[in-house]
Image (cartoon, rainbow, N blue to C red; front, side, top):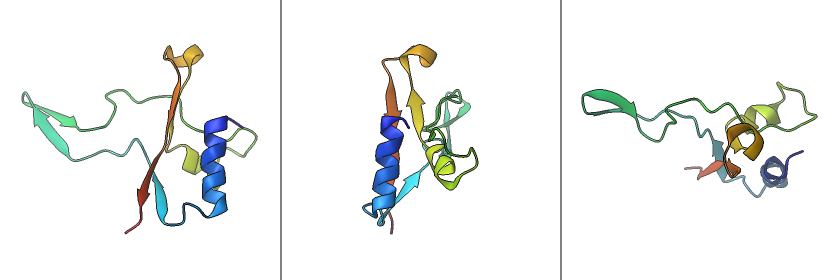
Amino acid sequence: MNENEGVIKDVINSGAANDFELLSVWKKKKKQVENGSPVSRFTPQTRWKSRGRIEGAEEESEMNRMMSRCLRSSTENDLTIGFFVACFKRKE
């Protein structure tokens, strides 16, 4: 299991996140217009291929569905310094 996904899994399973929901970093916002062209704010212009996932878990498991809401970047595959993004929002 990757470290970052492991932290998210542990937080969810521990109940510490009961008052929060894991949002998708891919959720499209209302379209806005810039220079006459529609643009979605805070949405990557290109779909990022690397998503969070729990290795060894079934692809369609509930935890992997939740992890697909996260963004993962690696130095080898994405030519970045490597990072992981997960977004929690307090439930109303």
